[in-house]
Image 1 (cartoon, helix red, strand yellow):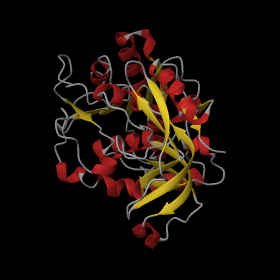
Image 2 (tube, rainbow, N blue to C red):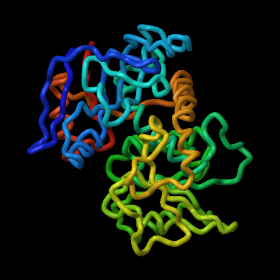
Image 3 (cartoon, rainbow, N blue to C red):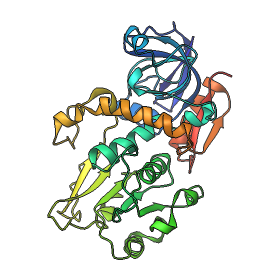
Image 4 (tube, helix red, strand yellow):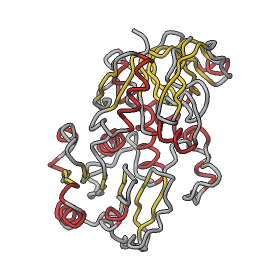
Length: 364
């Protein structure tokens, strides 16, 4: 089979080589890749670590082979249409004709969901889900808040990107409102996702930090907000977002979630009442943060159960896709199949993916 290796230096380039179809462990599934998705980490992590790898982690395709323990569950069968989150920085990724994923991060996709749409979902929805429901303790979609519940404001910075958009979709599925979505020029797809009747609102970050904070306060309409998600987590974006949160009346801290492990988040100006919480999405597979990560979790035992939670979450993602409560992210197909991976990652690195994801059609 053909596999892409991404090289980060001196300039990003790829090579395609022939390798055997991967062998699988007892709890793994080999997937014939129809479409592979892309994420910023596909080039960023390789550059930071100066390593070469098949770095794709978003898989959509059909089941080719099942591990012995997966067979016993009777949950999947050869030929099933599936999407999967491949373990980051490990062999047998999505940029190949066949890829491998643990069965707990594989979910079935209905006939109504195209492989292209499905390839936009796995990694980012896992990041959004772990952030909102595990790290911040908000109610998950299978146990949503009652319609009689008081408002529970949530600020999402970078809401037009794939991660921010899936955070909006999951919050709405859990009846978390009002959602204050902060975005820029690529927010054309957010309107239908926001419920004005429940106070949801869109704020343009391009007005500047001070006006942005003023507008958020205005949209909150007197409500105190104790939950925020900075899906960008770069160039100090978390600092103005932290100032939009207030200390809670019961003396507990407000929560600001971030997704980059490259920062310390101890900047001057962050209110003492705000707890900055880093989401490492790799816990969906490992159940642990990596040694040396600056923002380590306070409850290590709880994090150990992230893989089990992700198993449940992925089954519910499949259900929401089936009843169309959930859809994928806007996408653009990069021509050339596996040959197009290099060009797609270069465009991603250049910041050209605005409000959509680049995907690669590996097979037809």
